[in-house]
Amino acid sequence: MNPLARLFSAEPTTGAVRTDSIFLGVCVFAVVILLVVLVLVVGFTAVYRRGSRARRGELPKWLSREIEIGWTTATLFVALFIFWWASSAQFSQWTAPPGALEIHVVGRQWMWKIQHPGGAREINMLHAPLGVPVRLVMTSQDVIHSFYVPAFRMKQDVVPGRYTETWFKAVRPGTYDLYCSEYCGLDHSAMTGKVVIMAPGDYARWARSQPEGDSLADQGRASFVSLGCGGCHGPAAKVPAPPLNGLFGSQVALADGRSVAADESYLRSAILDPAKARVAGYPPAMPAYQGVASEEDTAALVAYIRSLAAPPAVEAAR
Image (tube, rainbow, N blue to C red; front, side, top):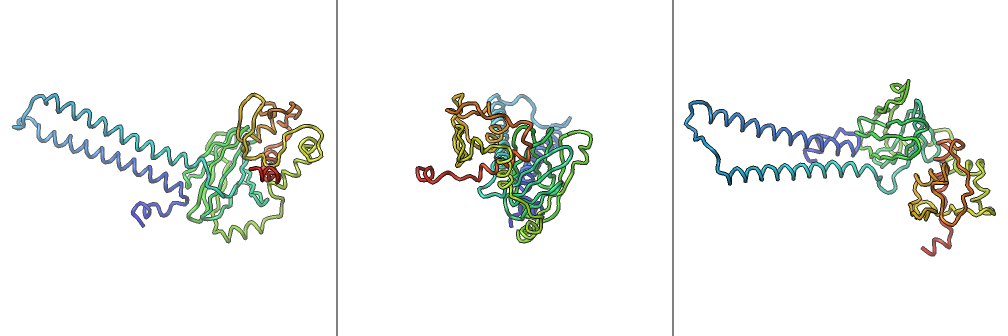
């Protein structure tokens, strides 16, 4: 194990190791610069003290120019390197690895509501397996919150009206504090919780021990029926509406001429405010479900649409 890995072997996630490595690197660089400046100041003070026989006078112009160009260029390249190092670590947090375990989080005054893919639900607790990438898809039911786990060096705003996401991969089991780091009202300080990292076998046993419930996609299927979505999008519907099978992840041509990817954010917008995301070639017949479908209903509907595979003919054509 290299010295850097040994130094951060107690960090609970790969992201924490990466963040602390950047912090340590910047600190080491700052200390080196400080020592160089200190040595130069002390050295010049000793050499050019009053009464010393050191040569004095103006430096040659060519030497002054070379020094100026050299330290300016070196500083520029160091700054660009630090920017690349930090930004690449930040960008890597935006896209979870393929096959990551997807967990939905809804923030509301003043609690965190967690929905696992198998149907297990939690309040202010998040259980996750060790060594498995976990993708958190988050939204808020009321105001802006911020999902903050200090030990993971992870903080992500949770915004009403849209989905945000982040991910982590735990490398050390344990229980870690969860906070809301965005002032969100009267009981903001009480909006706390725990993240419990468990061995994969323990996590599987924990998930099986939870009260049986429908998966998020199954809940979405129930909401699809209860909200009357099948009247237009069902197989026997007579109203022209875009097909949902194979919709998720495809490119959708909109009535305003744009083409967008059918991801979670697009589907959420199409459900709550369809006029902004109307598909080309279809009449504006769908009602807005803003204020009708809750955030939990919307997340479940998105999960249900994601579960709908493309019909065989479409798959063959692809």
